[in-house]
Amino acid sequence: MKLKKLVMSSLRDATRSLLLRRSTTTCAHAVLLTIFGVACQPVDKVAIYEKNNGKQPLQAELLAKIAVGYAKLGQQDKASKLLAPAIQTAKINESIKTSESIYIRLKLLEQLGIVYVEMGQYDKALQVAKSLQVYEPTYSDIGLKHITTHLTQVGQYEKALQIAKLISIDGNRYIFENVSFLSQSTSIASQSTSIASQSTAMSEVALKYAQAGQKVQAEQILVQALQKAKTSDEMAEVALKYAQTGQKAQAEQILIQALQKANTTDEMAEIALKYAQVGQKAKALQVLAQASQNAQYPNNIDKVAFKYVQVGQQAKGEQLLAQALQSVKKEKDSKIKNLDLGYIAISYAKLGQCNQAIEIAKSIKDYPDYREFKDAYITHDGLIIGLNLPDVFVEIAEKCTAAGRYEQAFKAIQEIKFSDNKSEALGVVAVEYAKKSQYKQAFQVLKENLESDYNKALLSSESDSIKARFLLKSQSIKALALPKIVEQATQSKPSAKAEQVLSQALEVAQTIKSRDDKVKVITAIAIGYAQLKQKDKSEQLLAQALQIAENIHH
Image (cartoon, rainbow, N blue to C red):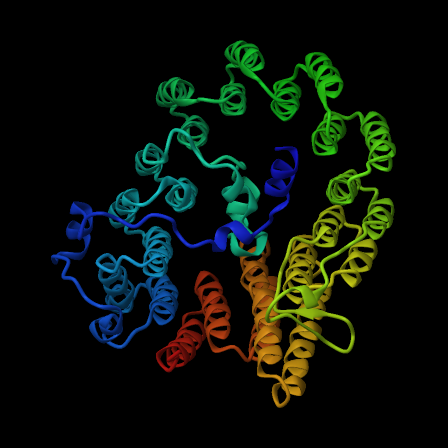
């Protein structure tokens, strides 16, 4: 059980790509009929693209993104026309009961919901969200959470609350927590909790109501959220929202109840942090002391240690990690030892001790050999392509980057063996540079590595097409960072500076060889120009993106 728990906790973004496990049992959902306006007719897999006006799911998704750009320019008719293929694809996939078609449909519905929010069509976003209910909560909860977050960001609290109530009561922790940073919008990545449950989603909406001056409504929602909370960490999250709305006494009472309900060291550590956040530092330290006594495994100890740092007790956190490291060195089971060393290494990176983290990670033996896996290959410089297994060095690189320790981050990246992992880490570095307004460094990281990946792919293509495909895939992951840099610039910089950043982003975007990635990035830049009131430039880029998207047939 211990090993199973450790493996589950260490998985990063793999969960997001799993195929759905359950298909729907009805041909059409009533809400979908409301949105799409037609009945569902059974079709076979071959007919799906023919009935989709020739638009494949990838094309449909890209056209939906472009539609947002035209909506930002006030061209609603053109935007609606571009949304039609996505709607049609989602509708047709309803009647195909393969796990792949269900996954395609779910992804498109989530995208549609977000697009409708961005276009200001909030009723349609709500209808799309309701249609997600026909799927297993393990997967639909994430999409519902994302749409809820987007609605709260534009002040649509009532509709956000309605969608929050569609999220399952049991909620989902692992999947929502493990979604790749690069796959999320900047705003979601910075604001969302690691729990996608009904109670936490409702409590976040309540906080928005309170911040908007609607205290009575906020309190009513918090009462309901607390009733829905099933676990101690969900209760603690609601307690924090009570404190943030000015009700500290009520928050403390809920934390007492949450602590009584806590069953694990991790839950106790989380409650301790909440005590500190509501101003009860002495109580926080008391709970952390109790949690540290109960901690048995390094993955428990590392969480307690990090919580100590978060409440201002850096020395105590480092002391706990040092004790855990000495304990792990005595472990006889090599698999458990390697996993535990990984946890400790990442924890040192969280504490800002990046050099120590890298050295511990280097001591881990038996890293996967590419020859053990089908379709995995190795380049002349030792980079494994075709796989993106969990890699402790990726976590270290991302934690060090967030702490502003770029030199150590690049040292960790040099140790990454799998190409997709290395690409993601480099993308995160670029985005973090942008957050600190160091755009020159951000573009340098992206541009150099985008060109390098493509050149490697060309060199490999004659002798091994699979190598070329996987190298291009790693280029795609880094391309995801560009829209985030654009979003960061347009949200936080004066228009003159933002325009300069957009121009640089466009220069890098034109070097992207993957057509679908290029469409996504150019569309993001076009939307940025629209926000800067540069209509002509925005229209020019949207036209380019549309031309590329219309000619994607794969």
